[in-house]
Image (tube, one colour):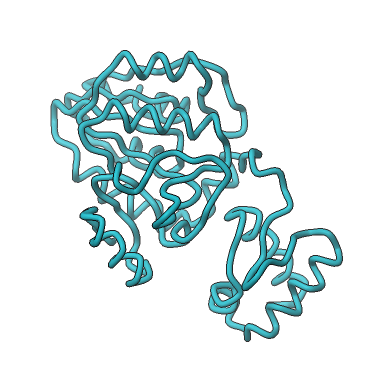
Length: 252
């Protein structure tokens, strides 16, 4: 990989995750940590990111959202595997909530035609499920966010509060042992928070890249999550931390 291409992808990663450590970047790009530090120094001088102790942080506005088109291709293989596993956790007759994450959309694509009620704030999830006659779909309505093709705001939150679901399946931007679940957008965070509050069980769908990350807006404490579905590259220390909090983990 050319130096310019590596640095361009490095900036994309930092902006996607909001923060990332040097040792992780070294593994991703298969170069030494010293090479990564030189890259970060150069990119900081170009005002493309900001170096921090042991890594780098994004200088983009925390509340901005990555477009749906971009999110569809970021870690898409891992997200599809996680979605396939999550679908196995759903039984006929269930009442579930799906957020506006791309992993939830992959779930909607894989859900079989079976009696089910799905509550969602995602336009893409609703459209995908409209093709499956036995599935009843309830959309929250609310303020449309074009970047994520989702509804947020007070109307979406009030709509969710009127219902009860067996299971809520959701994702987020960051999963941190102490900080809990966080998102880059406070309005999305509030919708996800409401989904957790109306559900008997909450299943977090998060690939390994999201662990150890702290984004802008708090969603919930780790103790409010019942189960996590992640990919097999999840750091063993993270798996141990989840076990200590009595959170069931399934890796795929």
